[in-house]
Image 1 (cartoon, helix red, strand yellow):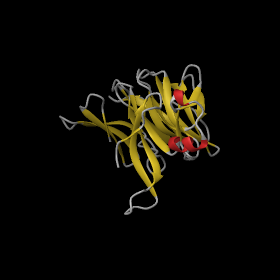
Image 2: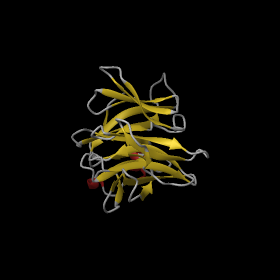
Image 3: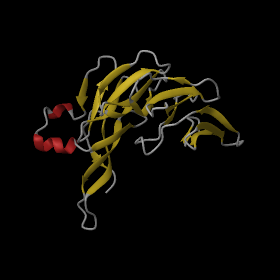
Image 4: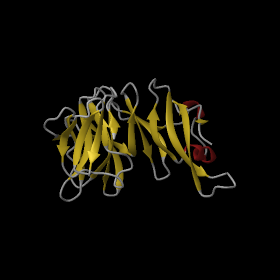
Length: 232
């Protein structure tokens, strides 16, 4: 389930077949769209997202061959339409741009995952970079995403297509040892003021009562510096 931006209603997936919206105060529960929906465990995140203005919903639906694309519909009800037109591929995580004009999503094509972006109506589609789990910056100028098999966090300017690993610019080219600090960083999310980035980091468990890999929450400055561990 997902709260609407105004907090007055909740969108949810019923039985993998319906997108519905329920008004919290009145209990009114309305159908938004029907279809074969793409749900966990086939995606890493819940593929149901409100537009920033609360007027639209985006989700993933599959065809008869189980390939998936992004669909959108008015949250008040109305005609659903496909926002991505990819053949023989699997769309994944969805992220609306802050102004609601664009949608970023990841797509698995021939066993490789790429970040795509298109206008919310499906026009002007572009493949941006190899990566997954896209997240917009507050100003809508760039997209953060995970990149690589030992995932790092990268950032790409949407207009120019320029991308870089999100490490402090003052650090120069990180050494092999320093690079380990930037590996296994997952699921970036930007703070409301755009000043910091939240992410999870996988590392070897240090505690005597834990073994294997530990997953902790970290934050960092928007330029990749000032990394701070939040959980221990």
